[in-house]
View (cartoon, helix red, strand yellow):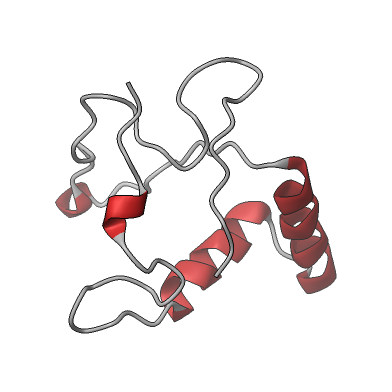
Amino acid sequence: MMPIMSQRPQGGGSAIGKRYAGKEKSTYDPASGKSYRVVATLEPDDAQLLIAVADRANLSLSGVLNLLVKTMELDPATGLPSFIDSPERFQEAS
């Protein structure tokens, strides 16, 4: 399993891989029919990998992320993908 980095991004904010304090759930309503926009901060090596995959596949970054989500297999017992072993690993940022 790949480690989740916990460095703070250069612009401030929450450490990578941690939710902002007080952000229990998204306020997005799928019934709205609107696309969900995501802002993500990636470590340089992870960004380079994502960009390279998108270039090779002739896809946008959002296209790659959409395919990852659509093809992600979830453990029926936990509802989590196999690469997340325990939600307790991800502590809320203060």
